[in-house]
Image (cartoon, rainbow, N blue to C red; front, side):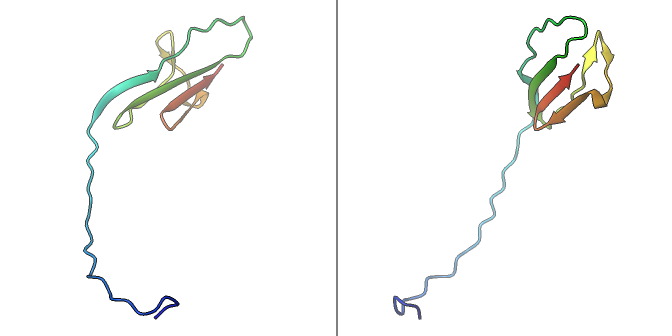
Length: 83
């Protein structure tokens, strides 16, 4: 009994399990790099947003050579690099 009074109980609630399946998707670049021109010694920041299921592995390279993994950051489909 509560402040409103006595009421009839409802039927037992049946639990339903909902399963969703995530379809695989190819790697994609959702926000590509912009062309950037810098003077020698000038600091630049590069940002790229990527997608795909499963989440693709991303690596920064310069002239085909990989940069140190610590040179950039990778979080929530966003890759950033400061040079």
